[in-house]
Image (cartoon, rainbow, N blue to C red; front, side, top):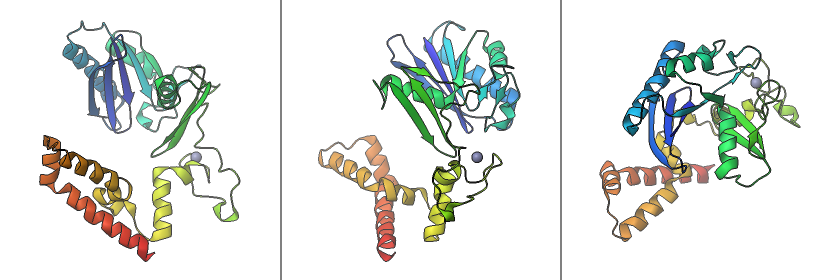
Length: 265
Ligand SMILES: [Zn+2]
């Protein structure tokens, strides 16, 4: 059995994959904030509990871990992680000591790109660029199924390059946490989209209720699916709960408000 661990800034998720690639177990916990030792302990606990849940011997599963940042080939220390408490520590060695076995570890964007190249959106492609847009902007390059690391382990990381062909009003660009200005990440990340939205519409998306955000993007699909299931007589528990919570009504109202806003603009 193989265990995959996704270490993120807000959550740690583990998945167990059997010999035929089928998912056997999945669980996530909150990432201890700013605490290196507690982060190691949380992952070791997840591994232990997963092996117990699967009914396999402790220590029998192989483990792969995707982390933010990358391990320095020269020192074995983790660097460039946005979970800064991990930086400067021999994270792989310390985790191996905790789980009492050798593990595989790689940058999370590279893991994502390999996964998409293997059996995802880019299956069968010779060269794959996997792009991640979230709080930050990352990516990975995979050639014939193998990730390119590059000398510094950041091949495919395109977020902190300058915006190509900037217009005059896009120079020098917003300050970036990396110390430069006008990085791609300051234009096309979640926070950058929020800033852009605020500048153009005067509406602060951080204060828009979740169902209003959903309304902009998902309400039509969501309601259509719900309605089809309702007509088909598929009144399962999820649907009943959603109806009780009034979610479709909230979505519909928010969608109507968003449409009015758009029309008024
Ligand atoms: Zn930057």
